[in-house]
Length: 268
Ligand code: NAD
Image 1 (cartoon, rainbow, N blue to C red):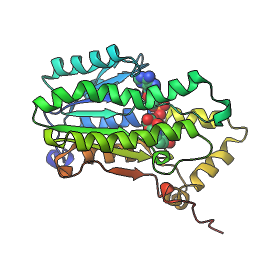
Image 2 (image 1 turned 180 degrees about the vertical axis):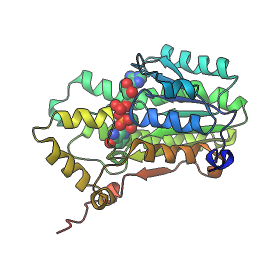
Image 3 (image 1 turned 90 degrees about the vertical axis):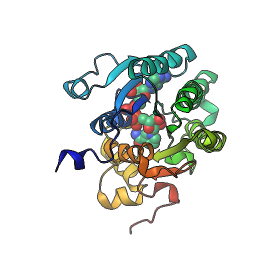
Image 4 (image 1 turned 45 degrees about the horizontal axis):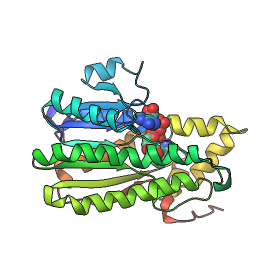
């Protein structure tokens, strides 16, 4: 493959901020955008020790940022803007799960989930928009979930946070089309090799059985016999931040093997 082919789409000179980019989908997205030439700044709650030969080689800058704290988020955006001379791309990826019946959810747990998954995206969007606008436009991608399209019984707070993130995506897309800022959501799941999925599986008595049950809930994952990879989700982000999607805004791309279509066929 030629260097030019490898670089299609070409994001050279684009400055990108990705929240929650130390692990999982955020990490895969940071690597993929950097491989396509973007100058990537990752903000994560816990970036310490995550720098590797790969991130160094790709010039990815990792900064500590708690997306629930406005001062942290503003500092992340400001550092990216001053080091990279502007901002073109924001990926609101940081998120946490919350698997609990609503009657067992404490006020602190509700706040933690909504603050990370929704308020974090609000804060980064708020501080990124003036910089995107001054560049003549840009792209924001919000990492929602299949739960944001089709809410689930086992995680009502998480489903609420992701449903609201989808609504936020559409609203901000409408508000800022005039600024040529495109805003889209990616709705993944089930994604393996992520801290979120592993922590759910670690709690299971029979890890393999639960993993198979999760895979079976997604029609294509089921026939493929595997979960979705972080890289497969990152590919959708790449499309949404590049010029090929110049006319795409306010959409949700489900990378979920059809999970959000409804009840899967039994396969029997
Ligand atoms: P992950 O746990 O591997 O990655 C989440 C990252 O967010 C971690 O690096 C974590 O340190 C960071 N983070 C958490 N709270 C933060 C905070 N307050 N401030 C800054 N960073 C914070 O899991 P993942 O699956 O890669 O999750 C990425 C996104 O994808 C999340 O928004 C998640 O809801 C979404 N998602 C994941 C799946 C899945 O199956 N794994 C499915 C649908 C949606």
